[in-house]
Image 1 (cartoon, rainbow, N blue to C red):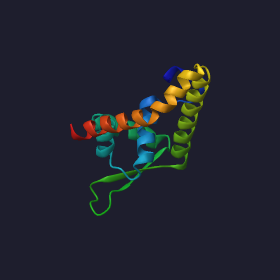
Image 2: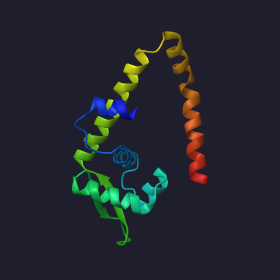
Image 3: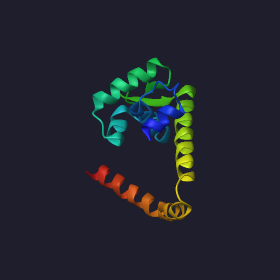
Image 4: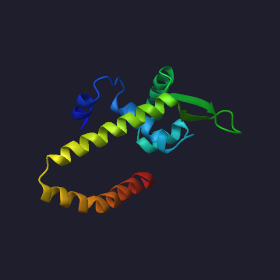
Length: 131
């Protein structure tokens, strides 16, 4: 998938890790860096380093985390939102093109398995949250 994504969007200069962080922030606007580290299963200092780079590129903004001024909340900028949208659109196009190359009988089985796979992903996420 990563190789296909690089081919589909050769102008992209963001790493997969950066795109995953931006995608996670799109799903959790206003998240603190520590929360993103939890969600992504990354070391907090790794997230801080990535956020610093993304802020430099004007993809993420930092604001005061509310009443506790020691904390920060992160938000996507318009450019950050566009990067996430482009990443997701390219991934969807890659999956659609790949599915077009799969035998129709397999496509049917893959489509039928999607609810079970979604449940499996939820179970894996729950394990990650509790562990």
